[in-house]
Length: 129
Image (cartoon, rainbow, N blue to C red; front, side, top):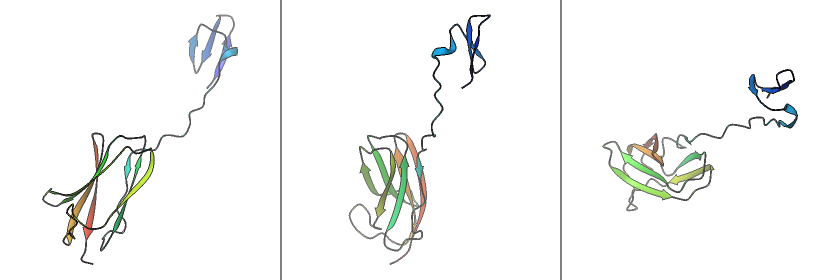
């Protein structure tokens, strides 16, 4: 922040904008680090034989977060609901099973992270154990 008095005009100039005040009481606040963005990182390992860790980052606390596993036809095979969750780094480990606890067949699947109205996706290749 750049502030200076323009005593002839009786104004304070802050970052090239004129304000009818004295600059002696101006306190500068420097911008802090940017808040992390919502992120859904690739599952690891991928391809997966037994379990895959799915890391994600929440930029702020959320009341409801969902992570679903979908087959290539778009059918929901498993849904995990989390919440409330604090801002920061999180992860969920998929055990390769569907919502009934049955092992899922080898093939391509999609993980979808839903946070509010935002959906992020990652592709997963599941191999036989």
